[in-house]
Length: 305
Ligand code: NAD
Image (cartoon, rainbow, N blue to C red; front, side, top):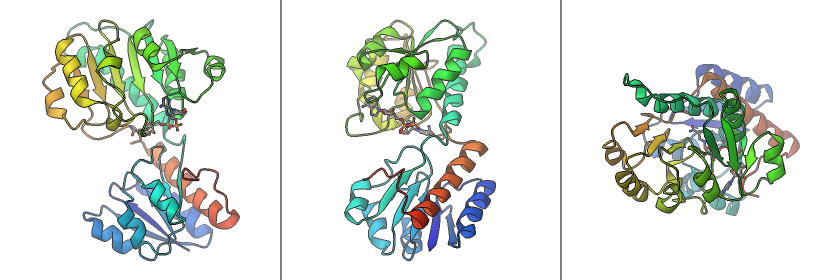
C-alpha cells in the first residue's frame, strides 16, 4: 500500500522518521510531499495513494476525486474541519483523527498565553495572578481536561461545560460542572475555548454570550477562529474596555482587533500543537492507525461513520 504524507507545514524530521518506521515496518511504502506550494502538487501526489496523512492541509472534494485508490485519510491532530468528511464518506473513504496526541501541548500554551495576558503583556505595569481566579473551560475533551489539570496547579477555581460530557464525569475530576455555556461565561473570570468547529459551534462565541462576563473578563481561544463571531466580539470590545481576547488562531479581522492595544494578542502562527512531542505523537499515531486499518480493519478513530 502507498501511504502519502502531504504536509504544507511538515512534521519535525524525527516525527517523519517515526512515521517511516511504522509504515515501512508494516511492509507499506511511504511517500512524502512536504512544503507544497500549489494544490496541483497535492492533486498529482494523491493519484495513486492508498492512504493519506495530513496536518492542517485541506482535503477537498477535488483532492478526494483525484485520489482514485484512496481508502483512508488520517488527520494527525484533533480538529478535522479541514477535511470534507461527508464527501469522503460518499466515496467510501474512512476519515480519522488522532485525538489526545497534542492536547497537553495545547493546554500548556493556554497558560503561557494567560500569564502573558494577566501580566499586561510584560509592559512593566503590575498585573494580576491566576491563583484564586475562576477559569471556565468550554468543552471538557482532551485539551479541556489537560487545561483543568494544569489550572489546579495554579490554584485556580475550575469550572467546565460540555454539551456531551456528563456532569458527574466533569465533577469526578474536581471541576465544577455548570449547566450551560451562558452560566460558564457569567460565572468565570477567564473562559478558555476548547470546542471543535461544527455547524453548532461556528460563530457561537458572540456578543450576547461574552457580554455576560464580569468586569475584566478574558476569553482565550486555542480552538478555532471559526467559533468566534468576530464582528460581534469587536463591537463588544469597543463598548467594554475591560475585556481581553487572546488567541492562538489569528482572526480574519486581526488588524481591527489589534486596535485594542493591551487587550488583544494573537500568536503570529497557530502554535498550540507545535511541540516536538505533539508532532511525534500525532504523526506516529496516524501511521499506527493506518496500519491497524489495513491489517485488522480497525476504524476505532473514524469520524465519518
Ligand atoms: P476533543 O474531541 O477531545 O474534545 C472536544 C469536546 O468538545 C468534546 O468533549 C465534546 O463533547 C465537546 N463538544 C462538542 N460540541 C460541543 C458543543 N456544541 N458545546 C460544548 N461542548 C462541545 O478535542 P480536543 O483534542 O480537546 O480539541 C478541541 C479543539 O481544539 C479541536 O477540535 C481543535 O479545533 C482545537 N485544537 C487546536 C489546536 C491548536 O493548535 N491550537 C490543537 C489541537 C486542537
